[in-house]
Image (cartoon, rainbow, N blue to C red):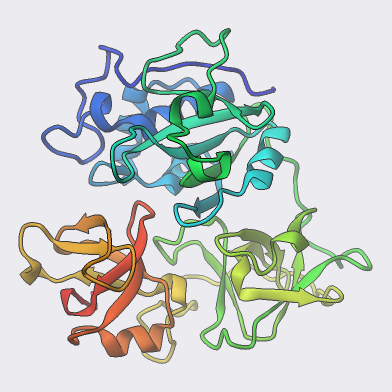
Length: 380
C-alpha cells in the first residue's frame, strides 16, 4: 500500500497527560512527545494501528526509551518490517535534501527536527515530511496547528526562523517501512554478485575492524553479523550505494566476501573498482564465537566504544558542548551513569579519560553530538 496521511496530535486529551517513556515530572506526551507522535503517524500511514499512547507502552516494553528520549531503532523490535535507515544530525551542516527527496519519492516519509521558536538557541521539535513542494516540504505536525490533512501545512511557513530550507532542518531520521501485507523486496543472500557490481573497500586506517550489522542500531553488539578487516572488499547491495561511500552519517547495505549481509558505516569506506568474489555463505557466528567488544584482545570499533558519566559530576550531570571549550554552547546535559558513544579514535580517547584539560567527542543516546570534559567520564 502507498503511504496514507494520518494525523495525530500530541495534545490529544486521550494521551497528552501520559508520562513519555521513562521520563518523570513534566515529561508527558503532550509536552515533549513530538517524536513519539511523529513515529506514530509514520506507522499508521503504512497501515499499522497505533496511537501515541499505545506506541508509548509498546516501546517501553522493549526498552525503547532513554529517559523520555525515544530510541529510534527500537521500533524494529515491535515491527520487523520497519527499519531505521538513516540517522543524520545536521545542526552544523546543510540538511541532506537529496536524501530526503529520494526517500519521499520511494514512499518513505522523513522525520525531521526543526526549531519551534525564534528564541535564541534550538528549541527542538519533530515533524513528518511527506512531499516536496518547490523549495519547501509538506508536513504533518504533532503540535496542533493545521490538523486537517486535506489542507497543506508547509515546513518553512512555520519553522524557517529566517533560515534556508537546508538550515531549517537540524536532524533527519529515515525509516524503511512496509506494511505487514506488503513486505520489502527480498535481497538475494547467496550466489556470486553480478559482474561489474559496485563495491567498496574498508579504509586502511580502520585497524580495529568495521562492524557489519543487521540494522543500524549501534547501542548494542547483538546485531553485528560480521567484522570486516581493513582493506576488505565489500559488495554494495543498494542501487545508490556508491554515492554513499565515504559519506559522513551515511549507512550502506553490503555483502562480505563470505556472503554475510548487513549495514555498515559508509564513512569508513572508500571506492573500489570491482566487486569481490563471493563464496558460499556461511551461517552467522553464534554469540559464543563472536568476540564481545570488551574482549581485551579486540580494540573496540569507534561506533562501539562507550563511556559513562562519572557519579561525581553531581545532580546536573556532564555538559555536552558544541566545541571543545567551556565557553562553547551547551547542547545537552547528561546525568550520572549516562552512556556516551565515542566519536573519535578509541585508543586516543581511552588515553584521555579522567585527565584534566582534555576533551572527548561523543554522541548521546538521543543523537546529540558534541564534546565532553574528559574528567567527567569513565569506562563502564
